[in-house]
Image 1 (cartoon, rainbow, N blue to C red):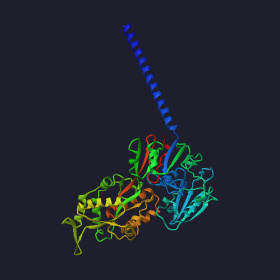
Image 2 (cartoon, rainbow, N blue to C red; image 1 turned 135 degrees about the vertical axis):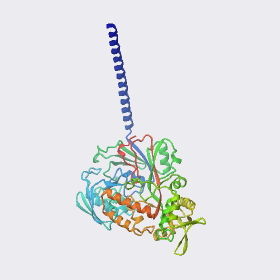
Image 3 (cartoon, helix red, strand yellow; image 1 turned 135 degrees about the horizontal axis):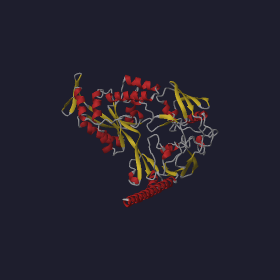
Length: 527
């Protein structure tokens, strides 16, 4: 018995040693694996230069360039009073807070811990100077932002008061233009100087050469530790054509490109990179003349909206180069958080017409109104030189005529097209617009709108929105606008055109974009 007990004890002891040894070996392997991962991560982050490429370079100065790629890059160098979030909310940047005092008057408080990249202090003088300079530059892309500013008064070093020539809905969305240094240009015309412009952003321009611009981290940037980037430098390679930019990307000479060329794969292939597609500002839609002898009837506008298959248009006609949209607001906007694309429902369209007294006879919808037989026979106008919209118009005609809504495509001259836009004398018009960064809908639904649409409740809401800052209440107001819009159908939204960013598979991080900025979350990108 004693011998057996001893054997059991020895066996347990040996088993314990084996388990302990195994644990030690596994732990050692795990530590080595973690060390390997840490070393690998450090090796990845040793690459501290981001390489970009642009063509059609004009100027690095934010007020003088018209190159969208430079405009995006400048967001890393210069800062506005207010900026725009990924979901299109306006938020603080150089401004600490802002308030609307009266219809035409705004008070803006500035942040006090801001330094220019030459270590001088940012003050209200710089804001006043920037607005005054833009007033002189009618060709600047930012002129529209400030053209309705009548005067700017410096209250103190960190407070300004802006007076407008008239009330501007959501005027705060205009305060997204870059601020420049008054001290740098004190005795110099910004259009006639070779000075390297300075900003208050996370990066500063360190060198400008014929074929390259180099940026480096701005060590004077506030909160540098909180928003530190993995890239110490950014190299912007300048090429004399977009084709050379694409070729440089294909060869691995640059890491990231932005383009509105939806045929990009023809130039850079389909492998070796990642890409993201996002909506740009180009919004196409059908305007329905609400005072037309036929389209004045709401049920016809409703039926048209139910029949149109937008997905088929974007896929078969536009070859996936556009994204379906219902409204002239980006579907990613915070006001459309519960956005649901309203799909085609042909049977519902027929039901709507029948309930309103229309009869489908001899291949067309008819109804006797005031002793006269009316038929749903509509002229669809489209500009004759716009090949893409002509293709879309032909698809719309095919879709609508399948349910008996007769469409006559009128290919009109540029002069006639402009006349329709100005005089609103048409039946149905296929058109488009560059949407505003602001959610203001007065262009579409306010007085003298393109669709000749009138609704007293919407007019009241649009006026109320001028004086509301509470986000939830704003969303409630917009929900009601969209309810009325979907009931009345003054327009049929079709699609937003797409832009693309393509980037090397070696470029990692949370890469997000919208048409305002392509550098959201830039601080966590790495290569």
